[in-house]
Image (cartoon, rainbow, N blue to C red; front, side, top):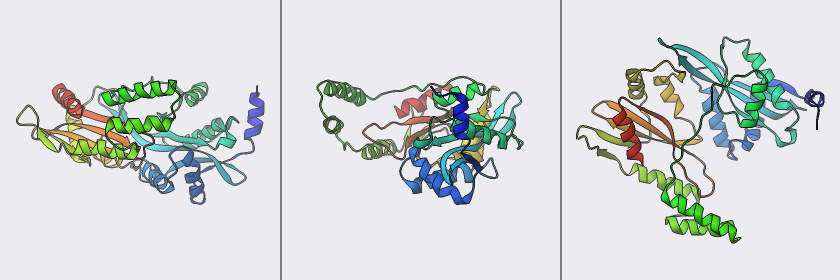
Length: 317
């Protein structure tokens, strides 16, 4: 067992700094432990999330240094939240992308790094700070240091029949001690496609796209699958729907123009027109996939009436 005093003494060797141009490359190298091995893609993601963010004038990236080397990082990107009737909006920094080099973990570094970041944010006009990406072990540390939890989110899953069959087959092969490569080859045979994850991803999205525009049961409505959002129309729809006063992100035109430019993701948009936009559903899949599992994630979903809301989801299924 390591005492708290020992942790504090160990972390005293670190220097904490705010974002500096001369450490950007080191930050990108460190983030390969979180974002992936493609440095150019990581650089694009960093620029999108922090430098091109429409809510903060400057990027808020905090780094922990050891002998001139970046060994830890946490970012605070801008977001605009609203609550109440009539709604009151707040520009809030949101923590994310926390990563510590494996050689420096379990030494109390994360707590010190967060304290440094919060001290810096306390000097700004920010009234609230959020963290929506905290892993369970990080959430516990935050709660122990005075953070409050508004609740927990759970993800619902719908698995295709092929996926269920593959998982059943994989479990059987594991019991029989077949190598993983054999399971992958059989999976590719079962699905009639390459066992390469990126190939499956491309085919999944292609099947979605090739549906094109088609009429719904209502002859006046059209369901369209597109690669790009419609920021102005989507913002007008959200404004027309209104809200019930709960905490939610402000979805205006600038939000839609920025939100779906994330270079680590690919997006498809399912629109319901009748004749104006009556609903949309945004689907996301990671830009990089590994193995054979391909998923489409619903990341935004709005409609003027329940019939359109359910109709969009049924169309995707």
